[in-house]
Image (cartoon, rainbow, N blue to C red; front, side):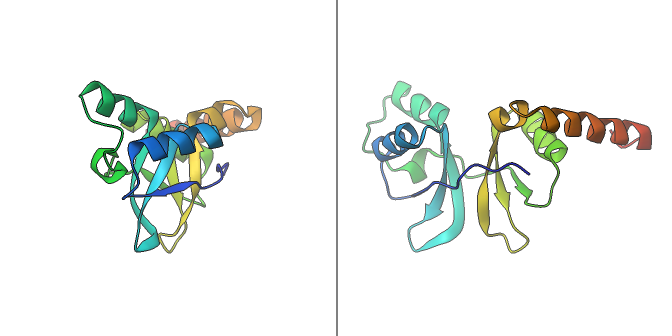
Amino acid sequence: MITKQLVTVTSDKTILDAARMMVNNNMGLLVIVDPGDQAKLAGVISERDIIRALVSGMNLDVKVGEVGTRDVVTVRVKADVGEAAKAMNRNRIRHVVVLDEYEKLVGVVSMRDLVGERATLKAILQSHEKEVFLGTD
């Protein structure tokens, strides 16, 4: 499966810190980790989360742990791209976090990753056709 480089931010950093990290790494989502255990998934923060916070009147010094999404949609590293695409579609999101079999953070898959690859599109179609054929859709 396609995964972006894992870029994390600790929950005690500010939304300004997160916005800078997003700009510097050219990404729209950061994985939030616990400051005491940086392997522990604490949430995600997206560009949309930051914009919502600012529009609602929050300051740039608000902690990402207060603004980010805690209920994170994840897929396993061995999942096929069709599973990732379905998780995004079902949850109306643009990113899913990839975990290994031990719940360790591996990376992030974005909608851009999926649609940018011709082989990926073919795999999504094949996965969907298989589910329709088997009657699991």
